[in-house]
Amino acid sequence: MRGTMNVITRLAKTMNERLDAMAEVERYRMKLGIYGGYDMRCAAQRLTLAEWWIQVNYQQASTLTYVAVRVLSQTTSSSPCERNWSTFSLIHTKIHNRLG
Image 1: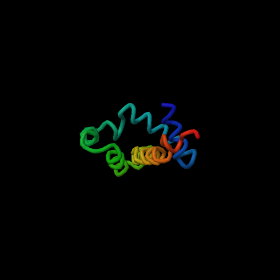
Image 2 (image 1 turned 90 degrees about the horizontal axis):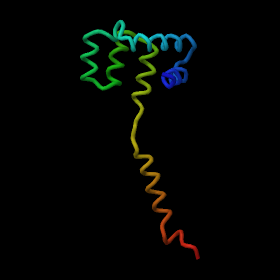
Image 3 (image 1 turned 45 degrees about the horizontal axis):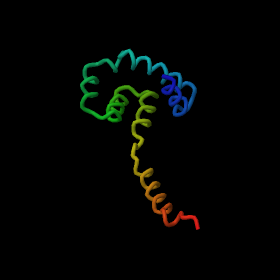
Image 4 (image 1 turned 180 degrees about the vertical axis):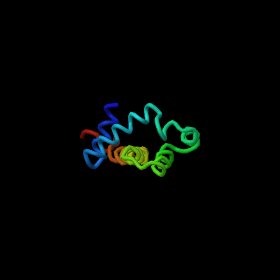
């Protein structure tokens, strides 16, 4: 929960938006309002997380939706890290590192 609040604090623009998003988190956790509807529960099983939150935004614009879409839309790929290690392995070889 502390991590959620840290993300909201960083991504929400104003204090009012932060407070609204924090109140919305509690409604989400309790499945109140739009979050408890049968349609949204069915949509959660078929859509990706980012698509589901975008669908929520169409029905009820909220700061929590903005934060969730921003977090879930980030790429989670290891290719930049792999590229870095490939370059590292080309530079640091046994022949190149021998003591002379």
